[in-house]
Image: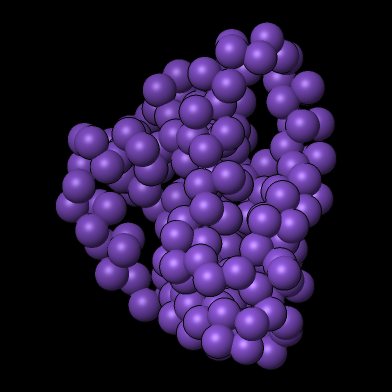
Amino acid sequence: MSTEEKIFEAAFKVFQSKGFTGARMQEIADEAGINKAMLHYFFRSKEKLFEAVFMNAFGKLAPQINQIFNSDDVLFEKIEKFIHSYISFVMEYPFLPQFIIQEMNNNPEFVAKFLKDKKRPNPEKLLKQIEKEIELGSIKPIPPKQLVLDIFSMTAFPFAAQTLVKGIINISNEEFFRLMEERKKHIATQIINAIKK
């Protein structure tokens, strides 16, 4: 394993357990078995390292989502698959949504760069499919972009506001993840029941 691979693996472990704010470069260096100077040689700051970890993780999610969006599956199957894939991914990388929210406020240049990435999910085919289903009378006449926003909001919000969600409904970390596992089916059922005729 190369030094850079060791850093990625160590950074993932530390960010996973401590989150972006709680993670320390010294702790990541210790986990990777290198000194802090070597870590700074590869990544000048914690922000740069996290961006690299984020883009590495994003590179795994984006193809899955695009495959779902661009498949020939029926609409309801796409909704189910998207929700399942997104929640499964974020349960593996739970620190990412909060990082994105933080970066939107503190580092808009990074967010702009991320949104311009050619690999980013493109829902164009899905939006056209929704329009077609409405024309055929298969689903209720809901604005396609509103439907996509509903799906994304219901899947992303609990992770983006994880601390708030746990506090409001008074649940432990283990209970939170159990609820998120249940939401894979719950959200799909809610959305599909709301739009089908």
